[in-house]
Amino acid sequence: MTVPIYKGEDNLTMSEFTVVTLDQRPDLIDAADTLASQSGAWPEFMLHDPIADEHFWRLYDTFPAYQVVLLDEEGEIAALGNTIPVTWDGLGDSLPNEGWDAIMQIGVKNHRRKIKPNCASAIQAVVALKYRRQGVSQALIKAMRSAVRQQGLSRLIAPVRPNHKHLYPLTSMERYIEWQRADGTLFDPWLRTHARLGAKIMKVCPRSMTISAPLAKWEGWTGLRLPESGVYIIPGALVPLGVDRERNVATYVEPNVWMLHEIGEA
Image (spheres, rainbow, N blue to C red):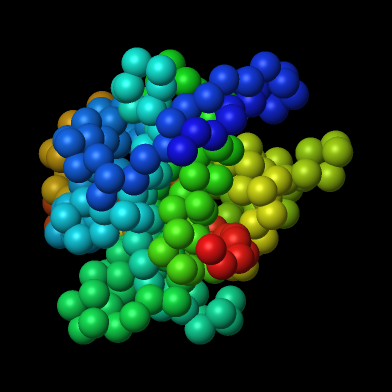
């Protein structure tokens, strides 16, 4: 399958990428995993979430039909979208406050218990460096939705990580998602991309990912000294990092935003 890509939000120059799922192309799994971990899309500390360490490999091993890649004309991966089949009752309040961590665990547990999914959740969307700021992320979301629809599911939920929130770490997520541009669209580019494709905000998930580690590791990940207990603003973080010198531990609790794509059935 090919998908049209618009070069930028307002530029109508188009090119095409080929969309495949990783059950169709298992030979791409290693390259996809490398893109996710080495693309620079995430600050280093985001790669050390214990739930991801335990379960992320299951996306490729157990749910490859839910993982999509966009291939450029040379057959290289331009973008990767990961999703996982889950169950959800359709009520906004029941979306877990633990967001990304919780939904990954739900997907794995449901599979082990042979519980049939009724929707899917996005896990991550990554665009290769040379294709960023060219409208590829919008095409990637469409490809993710299409892959979910092909599995007979009609909803895609997503614990979205707003990509400009790190510039405003002292602002609550609840206030941040209310910010708008002069044209009335959402202030945050990544939230806005989802909204332009019809997604709606359901709620904030205040504890979407929790990363706790010794201070030496945090100093290595951030390049900062953490000389006393307190809260610190660190590069790439959506909220401050909490530091406890006496216990030699720092903990980061990241909020995300639950959004819902109603995508219809195949």
